[in-house]
Length: 99
Image (tube, rainbow, N blue to C red; front, side):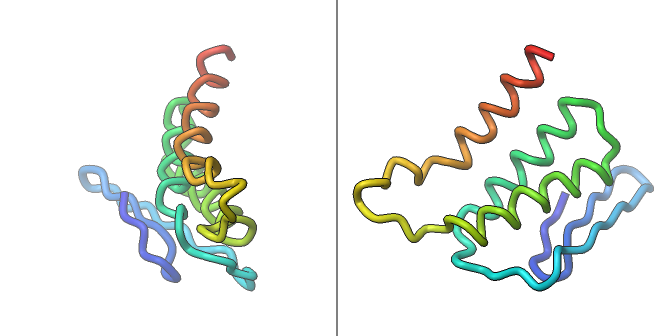
């Protein structure tokens, strides 16, 4: 799996190449955390036996949300949110284990 910024994401497994685009017209606050949440979304899909394309789309969906809403612009009161991508991954994993 490779993220390519404005070119979307691609997965190459053996001889199969799968690509997805990016969401357009995003109001980007900060790109920090996008990669972590992309990985969390992809792994959530993989754990739940989604297709590779659906996994890539889940990753794209989550990363597009973080860069529009939170990014790295946190004041000291909410600095604990800096680990949000990790908690999102753990939450996704816990949900999949209880399903």
